[in-house]
Image 1 (cartoon, rainbow, N blue to C red):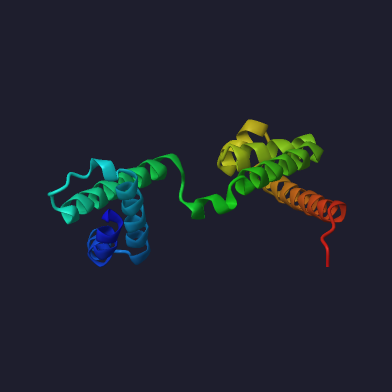
Image 2 (tube, one colour; image 1 turned 180 degrees about the vertical axis):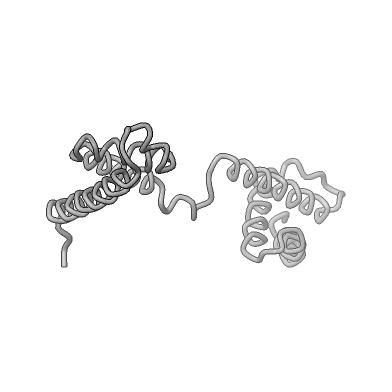
Length: 169
């Protein structure tokens, strides 16, 4: 008998659920949860009281539970879109860093010092020339040659990796 009364209230339950969720699918899920709870706890319903009020209270409480669950889930987990590239950037940055370190180790000492002072530490050309006790013109030509050498070494490294891990056509 209670099942028939519940079925008769389905349109009203759905309308109420839509009014609090603003989303058709969420409302349908909410009505389903409420029906499961109502049927599972039918012994808690007091005869002679309004069945619709009891059901609306179940829907309201189920929605509160759902909202709280979503809030906890959002706190614990990043949105799905953020997970698309997890691990890629860190691994790629690490590989690039390793390639640059390897290329730097292959430079001559004078080129490595110029790159370290100007490109890594950010010293102005004049100060870097003073540190190395060389004319500024010498510093700029060494830096130009060091950049060319680094670029060539990094390009060769990229080509070597591409040959080591050929892609399928």
